[in-house]
Image (cartoon, rainbow, N blue to C red; front, top):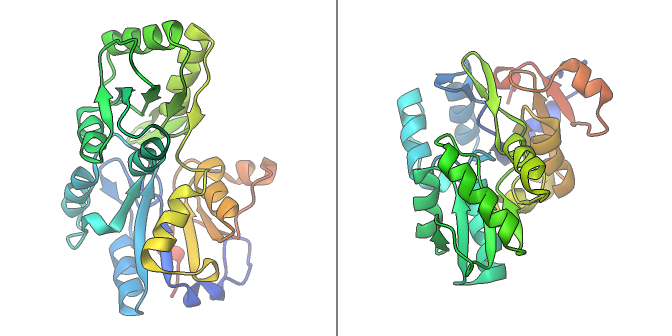
Amino acid sequence: MKDFFGKDASVLKNKKLFLFDMDGTIYRENDLFDGVIELLAKIKEKGGRYAFITNNPSKSVIDYVKKLKKLGITNATEEDFFTSAQATVLLLKERFGDKLIYAQGTKSFIKGIKKGGLNITEKYTENAAAILVSFDTELTAKKMRVSCEMLTKNDIPYYATNPDWVCPVSFGSIPDCGSMCVGYEYATGKKPIFIGKPESLMVFAVMDKFSVKKEETVVIGDRLYTDVAAGVNAGVDTICVLSGEATLEDLENSDIKPTFVLNSVKDIVL
């Protein structure tokens, strides 16, 4: 097997854990890419495992399971996912315990992090220990105002679920959490601590869960600065697919270099 540039990628046949990004990697909005179902079946047939590690926290894991089943991945379970929302719960529980946290996000996101054990409010308060902003596909002017008021009036730690600039949709892209946070920075002067990829937390969490070594793991994604960077930071092999955000120009100009480059996941031969 050769990658896009003719590099020998036969080492992929020995991998035991395949960590897939979602948006732009296995689907675009509501369209599953060709070859995904066949590849997932092949991984299991060879005795491997796969998991979906997404920076998009707008849906809970339960909602992601429902979405993949609608797209044709009918055997998807909650065990197959690790999202930036789950990474957020791990980190903030460790740092703040049951202290009150102000959070902005979708109904699904808020429900998920509450279920995970975080003490959350969506209203303005002076009693919060931290501020949390996520990719919010239900964002309103009222929610933006409350978040800006929290950031302006409270000198407390400020976190964001993920640094992605855009989220792929059917016609192109829409602003993601990273872009939203730039807007808040212009309004309040505050910058967040980002939690999801490119941090290695999500990669290591799934490796530990399935007791898999670094050399047995590969991260597959369409973004250099999040997906590929997370794999690089974790010390595992990476595949950048050209089905989403990253372009050949990006690959040439970026300091972040994937182990392999492919047109799409359909080109992964096991």
